[in-house]
Image (cartoon, rainbow, N blue to C red; front, top):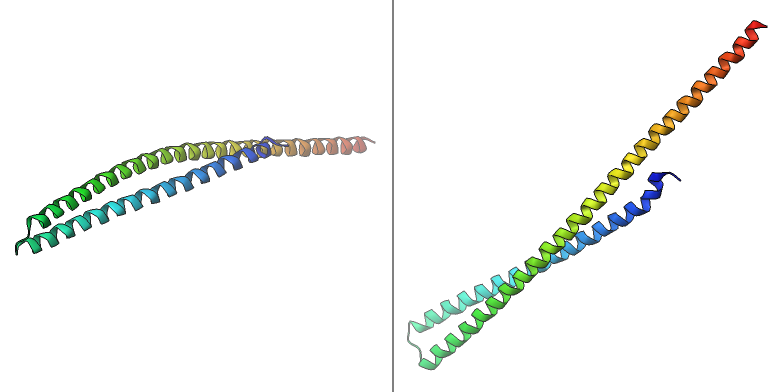
Length: 151
């Protein structure tokens, strides 16, 4: 069995690992995007709630309603801070998955180049063997003709 054929299973495993790493990276990127979307929704809700409160407050509000507003805004701010933390964690995971994919990609591509070089070398050697065989056949044919010509 040729070296290139012996390397094929190794190359297939490396390619599968690269594909798995790419899928994990894609999943991590989708998760990060979902978390960023949630943060945007929280911020939009916070802005809308503040705007509605301001419109209602222009006509005058009770102290209890004012305290309720501040408590709710504080809990929204806390939710936003927590979501920002979730995003930081998701971004960190995404960066790790990207690094793992890059490593797997590099291994896959370098193994592919090794297999390609082996194939080229095997083709070159096969060509040399064929040329040698053709030269030998031509040389034997010429000797045979020479021997018959001398008779």
